[in-house]
View 1 (spheres, rainbow, N blue to C red):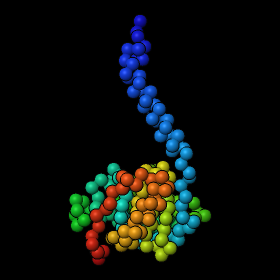
View 2: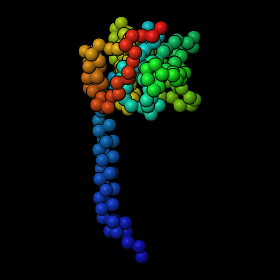
View 3: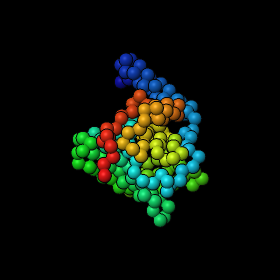
Length: 189
C-alpha cells in the first residue's frame, strides 16, 4: 500500500500549503481593489495623432524597445487605426511597426477601448488620466498588469511624470516596476 504524499514528504506538503495560501492572499487582495476609474470623457479626434511612450510596465512584446510611439487615426466606422512603432537596439535603430485597430467599448465616456493587433485577440486600453489639452495621458488595463505614460513630446516634464506615477500608484499599479523609455532629445521629422 502506498504512503500518502503528505507523510512521505512533509516538506512538500508545507510548500504546497504555503503556495496555496499565497495564491489565496493575492486573489483576495485583487478582489479588494476598487474598480479602476477612467477619465469622464475622451474626444477621440483630439486623442488622435502621435504619442511618445514615456514609461511602461514591462511587456514581453516590448522587450528591448526604445523610441516607442503610438499613432491613432479615426476611421469612418468609429474605430481608431493604431500604429505602434518600436526601435531596436537604440533610439535610431531599425523600426518595427505593428498595426491594429481600437474600438470603443464604453460609448458614454470613450475612455474604455479594446485594441486588436492580431485576430481574435483583443486587449484593454483604458484612459485613466488625460491632460485637458491632450498633451499627456495615463493608460492602463483593469487588471493593473499594463500601464503606459504617454506624451505628445519625446520628454515629459518631471513634475508631470511624478504626478502621473503617483496617480498610477494610488490606482493600484506596481509603479516600482516601470521601465522608462529612451526617446530622442527632440522629435524627429
